[in-house]
Image (cartoon, rainbow, N blue to C red):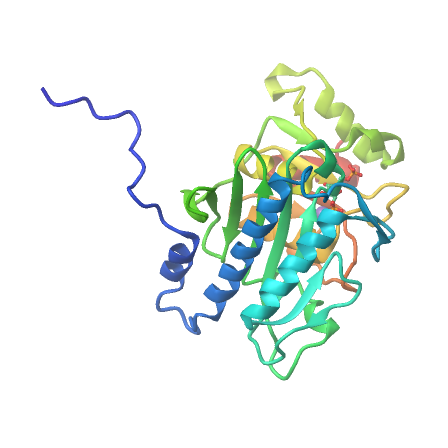
Length: 340
Ligand code: AHG
Ligand code: MN
Ligand code: MN
């Protein structure tokens, strides 16, 4: 009597590591010099080091503030600074990066001017959630460096030119979600092996979802169109799947990760307090937009695709609306006033 086939495939003896996945994807591609793989390995190492500190934050004395404020006038948390220092050190040391832009660096940092790539990152996203043990993350993106040397303006380019983008979520497990332009793939850290293994390949964002994610506390300062959209999300219309469920973590990586996996919409629109929105184009909106579009979703500022917008300066802000195709399109109709 043959045992019935297990309902699910048993995991492989040894999973596919992040490095193997990248090397497989790069095999035979032009310019697969190994620099790209080394750079992604450096980012993976930095994420593992940050993860170790996040997991013991309360004991490692990294709760709370450094006492400094960053270029955005925000209080810098100790973990923001730690994560930034680790990423800068590991990426500079790998020698494959020409230029770094970081939320926690006022100016861009030139590393190896002859290197082929430039890296942007939000070293610790969701800082307000550090002390309350809610999911936080790290967001990063990689551009090719221009020939003839780099400067601050080298990074003022549309997200369509990205060669890779990804984020880490320090949540109930630690994952890296990555795209090098060939789909979106999730890797989960095996803490006992200290390695990221492929856990969910080819993630796709459903064309519509059941949840909307926005800070409803800003309702009074939204435009009339966005207020009408929010009321529509909460209205009763079973045929249209309304009301939508509401989820809002307050960490972009967590809200975007749920939206990518389950569908629906995340929005941080402009409001009376933040005329250009709150999120930063270079190291929050562009990487998230690259990933969500690679997964079949949309990411706009309410009108234009985020990937077509060219930053005017390193820390430029932008309204960010991302998620399922149908849900983002509906938001845009309300925001434009063509739907009431
Ligand atoms: P960061 O911690 O890197 O400054 O990012 C915080 C961002 C983002 O993670 C999140 O979506 C948003 O701030 C939440 O803002 P509100 O608390 O204003 O809703
Ligand atoms: Mn952030
Ligand atoms: Mn941050």
